[in-house]
Image (cartoon, rainbow, N blue to C red; front, side, top):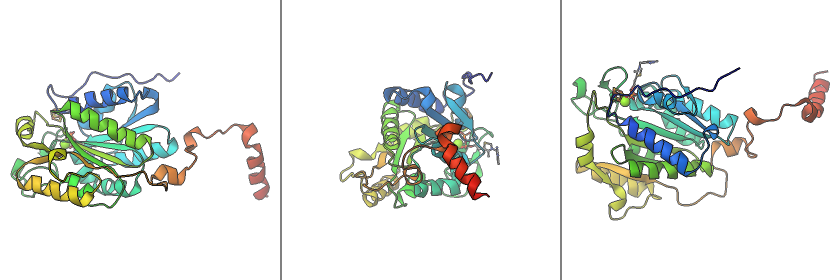
Length: 290
Ligand SMILES: Cc1ncc(C[n+]2csc(CCOP(=O)(O)OP(=O)(O)O)c2C)c(N)n1
Ligand code: SF4
Ligand SMILES: [Mg+2]
């Protein structure tokens, strides 16, 4: 008999920002009344990716930087599932960068949460692609995932949150999951989630974050406006957070990958394979094979 996996106590350091993401995800799923058997968490390799071990939920630990490919596979196997890929900035923006960029274009209705801490927490604090100049000898300017996301002309949901503000984080996750549940496509949320052991940025980020929805001209349906607002905010030494892209209207065409490939929303994992229902098809195949 196969026993269902039970959650283990968290292995994160006390005070790690990832606790904020875990709590918010639980609250968001509870608010949307998503039963655990209808949700799958696909974790990346890193401290953050262990999140599925701490919840009583279907989950898998993906290969390093390959969680999106595996999450898309799960979604296509059964599009009725709520699929959340969740990992670190090293996982997503270094080894996983190619998959990250393609996820916007592929546009499967999955939620991708990156717990961004500017470092490789699990391997003891090397510079991630998001690390600031000078961190652990880093000589490169940091990669900005929100600007990269906004540069893609795709109908995705894009947001940045802060683990130090769990209320907004939960609200944004609810919105992102609702976007997925309406089969509207890919939702990306970068959560600023400080690594208190190797790069404790809680105080700095609390002072620097700025909710772009409070800025004059804010319009999350217009990526050009949002790109400019984010750049202006960064130029002032602040960190833009909030919903950065929310496509204005539901397209009349099926935009998401699962609706393009499986318009009836029935994936291979739930396709009936009983003999009775499939006998005519099997007979046809056998006849064709001679
Ligand atoms: C193919 C491969 N290369 C390198 C590693 C070593 N490794 C494990 S986790 C990790 C990066 C973790 O950083 P991040 O994704 O930011 O997660 P965090 O621990 O910060 O949450 C690396 C490089 C690995 N496990 N597999
Ligand atoms: S090393 Fe950093 S990212 Fe990893 S659990 Fe500890 S505080 Fe969190
Ligand atoms: Mg990291």
